[in-house]
Amino acid sequence: MITNLNLIACQSAEQWNEFVAHSMQGTRYALPEVIAALGCDVEYWFVVSKTRVVAGVPIIIHNKAGQNLPIHSYYIGLMYHQDIFNSKANRRTECELAISEFVMQALSLRYSEFKLSLHPSLQDVRGIDWFNYHEPEKGRAVIAPRYTACAELNSCAAIRAAARGSRRREEKYAISRERLSFSIEGEVGELIDLYSQTLEKQAITLASQIKQATADFAALILNNGMGNIGVVKNENNIAVAAGLLFYDYNQLVHLPVVGIGASQYAGTFLYFKIMDHASKLGYKQIDFNGANSPKRGYFKHSIGGQAQLYFEINWRQPTV
Image (cartoon, rainbow, N blue to C red; front, side, top):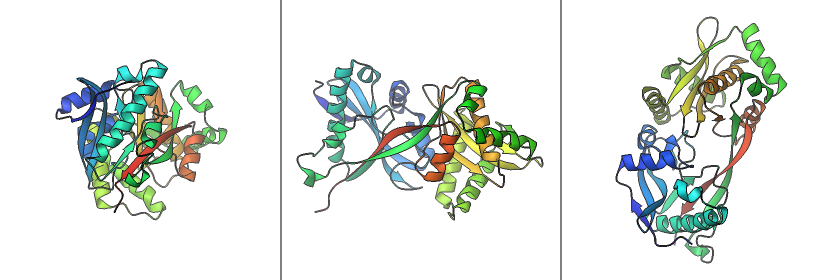
């Protein structure tokens, strides 16, 4: 059993980035510059056993574009050192239980509330659930199941074989009927305009803070070589769909922001072409980042995405 655990503040961005890059749960969503671009302030913590870092966890302390976790983000939560997570099954289980329960205890002494988004590789949440198990009046964690949709990036033919036949037909119609074309040279302004239009179709007005954070996030990704904007244009060279590709560790690419304008087939065309592009770059999987509403879930699964469970953790200090 792992012992002598302590929670220590990480004061070095370089040390944090190195840890994140080598953790199986590590994601570029958890990098300081990405979190800052999304309008959030964060505190970083390491879990140390004796003198060895065994886990890390970022805690959002302020979000000017929303509440709790940054908008458009996923898997900003508990991350284990690669040696812990890659150990034998029984050892890994012991460590996960001990570390996760310790983290809940230690964070509850420092924050009145906090929220975590766990990486899909973390399916054993008993340590979190066992926190205050025998003293529920002190506050137990709310563990919420969430789903995303992920697709394997193989050949162009294999990508389409995983999709519904109707989607494959729509891709052909995008070319033959709407004369659509795709490039990876989309601009931030095009993405934001189409994202705003997508929300307007749902009777949602994009708040200025969210619009700015989304634009800052996209600009950071482009300027730092961490992604591209795929764009679909009609025969008049007008952008009718756009999606932000965010290249992550472990040969994974995310699609956190998508906007669809006035076109019947542009959405399907965009998704297929983005998958083709990421596959050619050598990425092995795409995470469509969320499948938790009926229409969104149906579309992402119909394009080839497979359901992937992950958990969100919310803890709040009980009021007296």
